[in-house]
Structure formats: structure tokens, C-alpha cells
Amino acid sequence: DAGVTQSPTHLIKTRGQQVTLRCSPKSGHDTVSWYQQALGQGPQFIFQYYEEEERQRGNFPDRFSGHQFPNYSSELNVNALLLGDSALYLCASSLEVLAGAPDTQYFGPGTRLTVL
Amino acid sequence: GQNIDQPTEMTATEGAIVQINCTYQTSGFNGLFWYQQHAGEAPTFLSYNVLDGLEEKGRFSSFLSRSKGYSYLLLKELQMKDSASYLCAVSPLGDKLIFGTGTRLQVFP
Image (tube, rainbow over all chains, first blue to last red):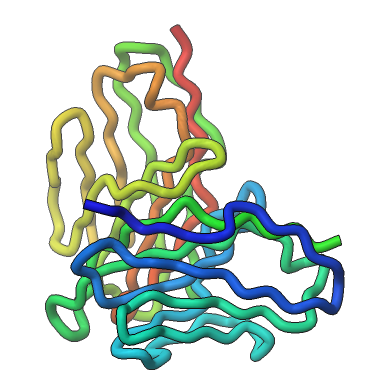
């Protein structure tokens, strides 16, 4: 049973560039959430996708956007990169069981983004 | 606002018991999760509490008091491999998780 996978593992970009990160959810899961984790901090919620639509969003600027595909995989796009965007980007998947109730989220290994 | 507080660091000895506390203030409460995160790795799910009381799962137990906005994670028979960060996360609404900064636990022989 494949777990959550993310690509790439590491990425180095320069300020002003754009980046796309990819996530494949755990088999059987239909919901994907993205988190940003700065060094020494807990993950911060960016947004969540369900049925190919953004369902919830955290306190992140519009430079952060995403997409979910019919096969439930997802992409996170960040435009106009800033030095402060350097972080570990985590994708988590879950299965929608009961609307409004939290479902256990399973995390992928993350993508380490460095902005120079 | 949303606030999750947990100690930054803790140390313990192999074979001992350690309790990691978490207090929270959130606009809404849908459940509380504990995750373990080894350095450079993804968080892995440990436990979930939605009702008051103790949930036991092997060497790990988690307790919740909703009226006090308080939870703890209890680790028994500590092993060296338990050295990791432990993240407390609250779901205030839907599936969104609000994480604390994590508690870095070091287990010594």
C-alpha cells in the first residue's frame, strides 16, 4: 500500500522564480492538504483540496495556489518566490468520511525548498 | 486567535515515562492530534482525541480535557528511537490542522 509521495525531494530556486511541487495521496484517499514547515517550527496550513476544489485556506498570500486532479493528486504552485519561502513543504492526504469531522491526515516526506 | 502551546524541549532516560503537555486556545474544536516527527522526516500519526479522557495505544497514551483546553501525550518504557519532535495539532473546523511548535524529546541511555 503506497503511502503519500512527493516530488521533488529537494529544490533550489532564486528570488522571483516560480515553483511547482507535486503530491500523490495515499491509496484510497481523496483529500489533500498542504503545509509549510519552517526550521524548528510546526507545520502551517496552506490549503486543502477536495473534489478538485480548494475547500479551506490558511493565512497565505495569493502567490500560493494549487490544483487537484481527477486522480486526487495535487500540485502546489508558488509564484514570485521570496527568501522567506524557504521551508519544508508537506503534503498530507486523508479520506473524507464524515463531512465536517476531521479525518486523520497522513504526511508525505516533504519537499525541501531553498530560495537564494 | 489560534494558539497551541507545548514545551520546546524535554529530556528523559531510557525505560522511563515522560508526559508532554499541550494547551490550546482555538476558535472551535473538532479534535486533537499528536504526531511524531524524526529529524528530516515527515510527521507520523500517533493518536487522536475528540472526547474527554484517555486513549491508549501500546506504549503511547493521549489525554484530553476540552473544558481546560489541555492535552498530554504519555510515553512509557522509553526507547532511544523515541527521540524525536512531538507535535500537538488541533482541528478547529473541518480538516484544517493548527500545529504547535513541537516538543523536542531527547532520550538518554
